[in-house]
Image (tube, rainbow, N blue to C red):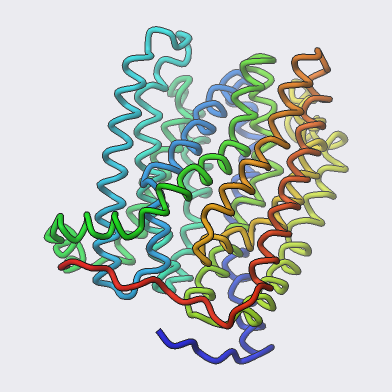
Length: 434
């Protein structure tokens, strides 16, 4: 594939505007989710939030590996025909991994605390939904359906907020928040499938030969080999702290942590991630490194103004506004928000260019960065808890370590983008019939 000539500031400006548009849709969805929190904290107890936080943390981790990371190989396929084979491979992987998790949950059900036993079958359902939604999002980016991708960033949080409030008002039980999450993923998948796939595509997916699927798996072996543990480490950094906090300090404290994370880290995941996705879409067009470096710097400026400064400001004022916003019983939530703000600000700067190692087929480097970051996050958390520190002190230590790890990720990504060579080339054609 020949490299297209960069068009300088005009092209970069258009790209930044596109990124800002996608982020604006994500921001709208996030604001709807945040607006629902004062209602949700009066419909659900901290313990209910704690159970949902534990569920969501587990699903985010296992959902990230549901497709064995073959979904990200869609970024590099040559055409739609090869993309359909890669999509079938991803769906097969989702079915396989979901079955493994469902079996593991059944075998471990006797040792799961009684109030969490229903998670043994809800987690696999949520995992499968996240895996399929991730594959469809990758399809959006590969074929430049940025508007549909942006609408998905709006539909997912908006539908989840509406369903959680509705289920709470209807008193549907302790797992109402979890069921709302699963249904919101189903709404997103239905929207993307209707918008992106034709009946002919579905027919070609079903008829794609198993030989071509196996050939695709062999060719893209680096994704499960390096990208899978890297993604696992990355999502564990974000989600395991809630599980550890719940086990160390109780389910109610996990609920406080979950609400704080939703208020502070939500903008990162729902606004900064679209910036990363726009960068991936631009990189797939094979612009040279100099252009990509300029693009990365532009997206970092957008992230700094749109996310970092507001998140730091929110962390500063959160202890003073949490009582009128959420109620007296949620005071610890405001303190935790202040602790998480620094790490989330660093994460916001790291996210737009986090796929650089994958785009340059340096998955092993991304794995190394995520493993180092995991040490920075979990070492303070476990050491602080072992030494008997106050829970809030432990969270502050963890946040400082996480911010350091994300700064390392920024350095590595910029080093790759500023490295030698003219243009990133796509992989070799996929062998085998379609």
